[in-house]
Length: 428
Image (cartoon, rainbow, N blue to C red):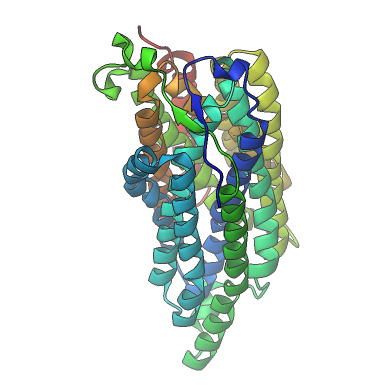
């Protein structure tokens, strides 16, 4: 039987007398797990592109299916959290994730691209529940002054999952049977059918393994004593927290910041391997490219751990301005160079991506008090930027080339720089 949850105030000073280490460890496991779910998309995109002979735009719909769920599911997830609490809401989210991951098996049998997209959408609805719960939950489990630092630390384990997932996914999903569009088109009907069956079947075991991981995490959550979040009554009665949550300019601009940042991050990650192919680096195979992608998420993880320290010592908005500026610079250099230099620049981008999401998230929730849950819901809805930007980049890539499509994420990083310098300031 699950232990009854205790209650923690999000705006009082319970953090001075309560040890939240164990709840944080449990929640950090969620960050790791949904990273594995999401970052496998970066392997699915080139894999399904090859298996179904898709264009860059069509293959990018993997991200659209996954991240549209954040827009659709965020408000229902917020409502569920209010009704049943964070712990039960997390368990519901894990159950939905498990159903979505399990559907990959019949999707492979039917060999329908649309079935894969539907399975991804369902899995992402569950992930949306986890995000709605976990991000603000980490923010309130401790000293409010170090909320950005805690969220960066938790998100660092998100980066760890992202580092492991591409290489593991590459080994389990990618066959190494690389075919050009011309070679696939030249196949006879029986040859193409055999090729599709072989490629589609490779996703079965990895996603069944993911189902097992989800069940394991759900069991740990069920038997954990997670404190329940409750807003401080004094804060809820203050004038600053009455009326529409949209009156907070720094929140509204923060939602747009999340939309653009996540769109930029996932847009680049979606076409990371495609970009390496475009560079035509000698002897760089499909499976070798997954190592570069792991390095990309590895630098992302290192940046998160460093960010946890930096945000405990320095002003979060200053750190955000620095990292967003260099993120834009890395893409400009990747566009203007070639070969291994361009590859190194795109790998280094992972490091400068690292702290942007947690800092934007916590800056946007600053001083919302009783409206924190509502604000968090809209910020999670902003993650749907990853459903919009990758397809737009795919259209540009199909019309011109993959390098030209990097103009879009550069614009996104420039907006994040604006948010760091001006948009995040709280208007009293």
